[in-house]
Image 1: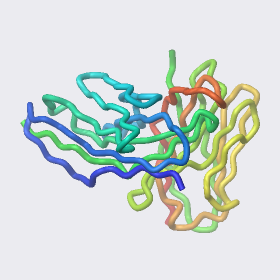
Image 2: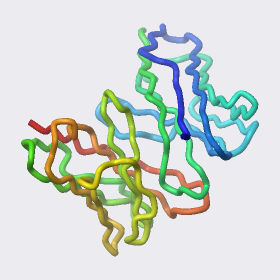
Image 3: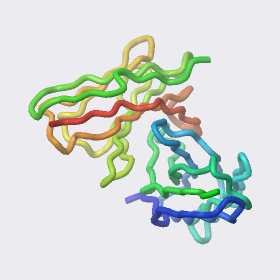
Image 4: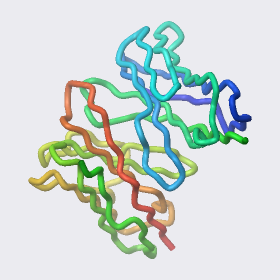
Length: 113
Length: 115
């Protein structure tokens, strides 16, 4: 079935370090791809999205490119801040399945000053 | 504009009881989806309601059910609670369902503990 696989955490970085969180997917069709972030005690917030191959989503310094050939959607940020500490989820959905998101396991990021 | 609200935020029940959780979507949103979040299984899709009809369903037993009202508010019910039902239940709303990309907005969740 359709699934999303993320690199395991926790990931611990120093402030201003470069961040990469790997995400790969298995899907029978052509999904839209998302990164969501969950801060402690809160629900999920959409961080960025890409709806077709080669699209690049970006927001708050985070970027991810939809790579159909490698079925990947890796999250990157050039310089992380302490405030980026959170759990990051990669997810996919299909255009004909409206509200159904399939999530990866989540990657916890901890940024130290 | 108010965000997605969920009530109650915390709930403690015992095995065998039933529970009802409530979700109020963002004004104007007609689709409401429910997810279960646990440390072991992660985030799993329960079901989605759109215009008072269930349009998608995940792989959960029939003890998990839901409904949506004409004002788009939604409730989910879990009957005969089991210890494994302890989880954070998240609700998400979006403007429409169906054949389009819809950004989903999540509520803060209801933390259910089954003793």
